[in-house]
Length: 213
Image (cartoon, rainbow, N blue to C red):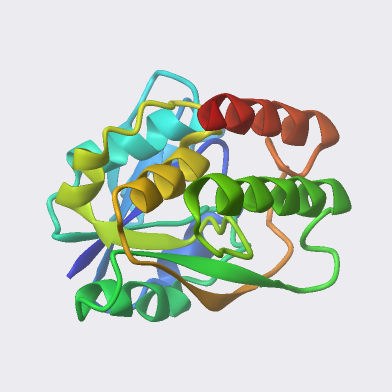
């Protein structure tokens, strides 16, 4: 069994589809980060376990889910229907069988799913990650899997948008085997709060630059 941590901020349009596509053996753990559209209540009504994190920030939500989880393997993914939960076994499989320590889903984007500013920021950050951490990633993918206990042991400090980058950087410096597998990436449902806007991308890039320092 693996637990799937789903950070949520006003994702009422996407939650039903995401939960419905969850494969057997993968248990959703929704972390509501201050939604005002009834996302938490909807997820609970659909049978998902919900944790509420009042401190705003993507990293705060991810850490709250990590702290609340109990499975040996945990996965993270966006809950906006841009990622397909049915592909989680492909990401978690190498962690389950012991051939990798951290696996990220490299996004194979459908037309219109990945805005140019987000793609450019991702490319620059991955380049810095290669330079500083020696990890030859092509995408700082939002679908990922690792051991819960080992992730807690990394001591990730960022509680905003720098969380994904800091995770990969600390894992590389700790000598983890970091791998990528391809996953599909489609247009999200609902309004984007972060990388779908220029301002959101700029704020995320700033947080990740802080994480690099």
